[in-house]
Image (cartoon, rainbow, N blue to C red; front, top):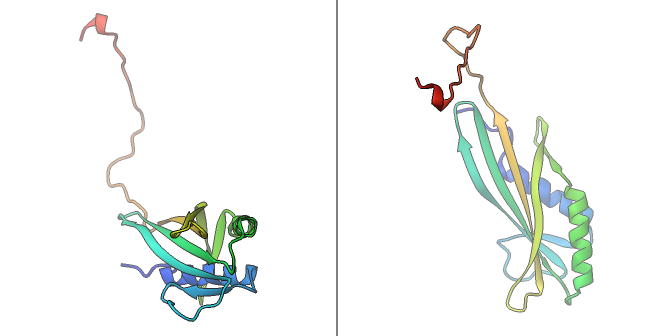
Length: 157
């Protein structure tokens, strides 16, 4: 099988860099940090939601999750952050690797309140990507004409 154009690591790295550039005063952590983090901060994780391969195309889906930890709960500030993420991530994200760059389409962006007091905002960005990976070669002759006959039931067969 051919090596993919980019990896799930490339997707997370690109998203984290975009988040850090957009909010330079908020620290971005991976989801493996449990102690010693500062607030405000973002915790990010990425999940592969689908991975389908056929002889002619490959489809992959990802969910990039951002959990925002505030210093003190401020719903207005949370909504401002959400709106900024909507704007920055837009309809696609450019994934850059060592030797190429390509666009990954954003399928949806939404948020929910999580945790015991529903005071933490989690934003989910879903990506969908389909890549054509091969052509189909037909071995049969190409049809030159096609005839269709439609009969009414009352006419019989």
